[in-house]
Length: 163
Image: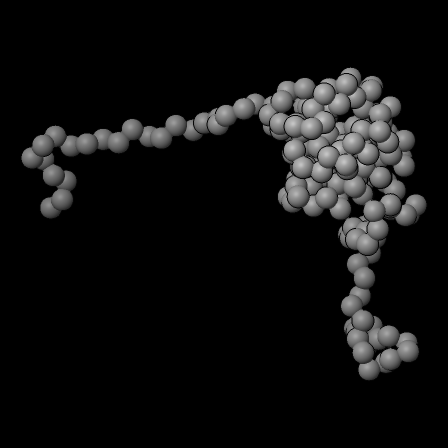
């Protein structure tokens, strides 16, 4: 049994096996092929964005998937994630996304909101951006402490615990 895959034109060279579609993400193109257009693919892309927010390629693929599936709520959420990741950078890309996905953003009253912040960008702590499906929004600003440190017990002077 041969576990290696060889290239037909050059049998001496080994070819890396491609993972099945369920376990891999499309890498080379911004527009997702029809076989990849599923909510599962968009969920995988959202997980990738959560781990690596600066991966603009994954952002664009996620927007493309939700737009192709005709889900305006998730398309708007994906556009908001891209805006959060870009910050004040990428004015041309943010403008293009605002124009292309105006209808999806309008359903959540985000078209005017994002247009007003076109030059300065958006803050991830803004509660207006906390839509269902937005991965990078953190509507609570500041640090939350869920566990408090245990008080330290000091012994009175002259009473050491060491033998």
